[in-house]
Image (tube, rainbow, N blue to C red):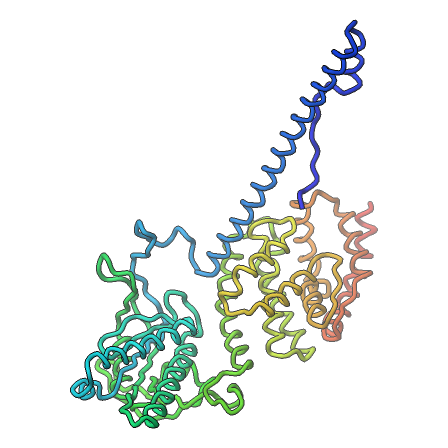
Amino acid sequence: MIDTFYIDFPEITYMAFLKAMLSFNISNLTLIFLFLLFAYVLYTYIRRQVQKKIEYLVNIRVEKALKVKEKAMQIRTGFDSESVAHTKDGTKVKSVKYKSVTVLFADIQGFTKIVEHLNPDLLIDELDDFFIKFDSIVEKHGVEKIKTIGDAYMAAGGIPEKNRIHALRMILVALEIQNHMVSLRSKKILEHQDFWELRIGIHTGPVISGRVGRNKTAPDIWGDTVNIASRMESSGIAGEINVTGVTYQLVKDFFVCEYRGKMPIKYKGEIDMYFVKGIVPELAEENKRNQPNELFKVRLQHIRFIDLEEAILERLENELPVDICYHNVKHTIDVVTQVEIIGRGEGVSEEELLLLKTAALMHDTGFLITYENHEQISIELCNDILPRFDYNPDQIEKIIQLINVTRPKTKPANKLESIMKDADLDYLGRTDFLNLSENLFKELNRYNGRMSIQEWNKKQFDFISKHRYYTETARNMRQVNKDKQLTKLKQILPLSRQ
C-alpha cells in the first residue's frame, strides 16, 4: 500500500484563472480552449508529481529490502560480504582455518583384489553409482564433499558454513551410507553376485581449507584431523562406523556407541575409538533404528539455535545505534532468558521452547535497519535467515506470530503468545524497573518525539495500572514487584507536577 502523500499545486487556482479570463473581451470558444489547456497543464503537473512521489517511495522500499537481504546474508554467513577475497569470477581464494570440522573417510574393503577379477567397465559403473548415491546423501545433510581418490570418498562437515552440529550430521551421513550398502548387499546375495563392503572412519578437529591450483573450484582440506580420520577408516571394520573419542563426546547424546579400545597416533599419543551402532532409541523412528524422529530433529535445532544466537547477538552488540538504549542487546538477552523461564514454568514442549527462544532472539533485529515498524523488518529477516538454520516453514510462521504479538496493544491469542508477551514486558515487574524505564524514556524521546518527564511518568503509571501478566508463572514472579512500581510512580507523580 502506497503511503498517503500530498502534492503542492501551483499558486494559480481554477477560480483565479476563470476570473482572469472573464476580465478579457474574448469569445466563448477561446475561453473554452484556454480552460481546457489549463486543465491539461494542471493534470500533467499532478501526474508528474504523483509519479515522482511513487518513485521516491519505491526507491525507499527497495533500499530497505536490499538492506534486509544484506543484513540477513551477514548474519547467515558470519562475515560482511566485502570481507572475503574473491577472484574475478566470484570464487573465494583465500585459505581459512576452521577450529572444528568433522571429516569422514569411506573406503571399499579389499578393493585391490576386486579390481583383479572384475570387468573394468563394470567396475567404473559401480563406483559411479556408489559415489553418485554418496553425493546425494552428503548434500541432503548439508555436508561438503571434498574429493574421491580411487575407491575412497572424503567429506567434511562444518565448512564452509561453520556450525555446531557438523559431527551429528556426519554420523547421519555415515549411517545412511552404510544402510545403502546393506541394501545393496542383500540384493547382490539374492542375485548370487559379489558385493562390496565399506569401512568408514570419522574424526573431529581443526583443519585448513582452501583451493590448490589456479583452475580448481572445489575446496580441499589439510591438517592432522584429516590424517586421523583416514587412520580411523583404515583401522576400522567393514560395515562399521569407527569414530574417535573427540567425535564421540559430541554425538553420544544422540547415538548409541560401543567402545572398542585405543589406537596410537604419531605425535598424538593414544586415542579412544568407538563404533556407532545407531540412533538412541528415544530419538529414532519406531522400528527404524537409524531413522531420526521429530524429537531428534528438534534437539538438533536446539544446538543449531546456539549458532543463530551467537550471530544475532554479535550483530546487535556491534551495529545497533548507541541511542537505542532500551531495545539493545541486553534487552534481547533478557527476553530470551524470560521466555525459557516462563516457558518451562508453563510446561511447554521442547519444540515450543525452541520457537519461543527463536522469536525472542529475532523480535528486535529490525532495529538494525529501522526504528519505525521494526517488527515487520524483524519478520522479513526471519523469512530470510531461519531456513538456513534448519527451521521449516510451519515453525517460521509460528515464530512470526510470536513476533507480531510484541507490537503495542496486540493481545495474545494462545499460551505461547502469552509467554512471549509476558517476557517482552518482564521489566515492569523487575527491581531495576526505574533504570530501565529511564532508558526507554531517552530512546522514545530520541525517535518518537519529545515528552516531558511528567508526561512520561503519567504514561507509565497509566500503562502499568491497566497491564496484566497473562501467565501464572509471570504473575507469580513479577506481580508483587509490579505493584511496588505503581506505588513508586504515585510518589513521583506529584513531584513531577511541581
